[in-house]
Length: 336
Image (cartoon, rainbow, N blue to C red):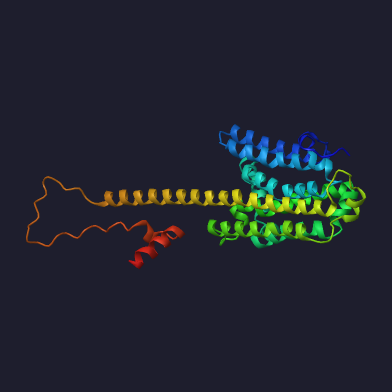
């Protein structure tokens, strides 16, 4: 093969029919859903659509049809970058598009109910349980590189495509529920817990890159030694480059992932606070309506008599509500 230069890195492409069919199917379904929601008078954020199309589906195209796919059979590092894009970056883009919520809003009532049942079913709840899904992502990466899986996939075309799908599905099991559907997560998985889990996931995602980079034994060594090109780096050095690329991409993805969870947390707090304020205003208006207005014919109250009892005061919302924000304020007032 021709030497992989900066120019060829940008201009070398090949067609991957199964990957293209998947991209077209996902894009077509998502576009249909958006049109259906808008046709019903609903609103769907263009930012979500852009994230799904460019970061999600775009990453799928780059991983499976760009120069990474052209050179993954002669160099290890393009294959390593492919896998980490499918495992981390593409799921993040797809999740930011919120496809599950779009499906519920776009589908007819019966079909939407079926989607909800599937999302809250035992199997999916087990697979998306935060610690389970994190372990699945780590196990998938380690299985790919430290079993005959990867070396066999280089020789067998259909298994290579299945490996792509395997990596994408494993990544989606963790990312999609954390960013989109609270129904599939345990009740204790609040936004602060999610932020901690994302931080932990960022640490765990670095493990495969570190192991690959420092592993003394060649991964799929027989294949890459046989297909080694004269212009290519030493096979062991090539593997170290691939491990370093995996580590770098994993850490780069962890930051926007964590920032997204923190942004959702802040937005949820604002919405909850606004709802509590509205409820407090309604309680104050209701209390004011129960106090009788004075009349002109009513005799003035003697100054010597005891004052009339004051109407029941409206208790602050943090004393009556049961939620995380109210509990925190009650603790603060108790300390005083």
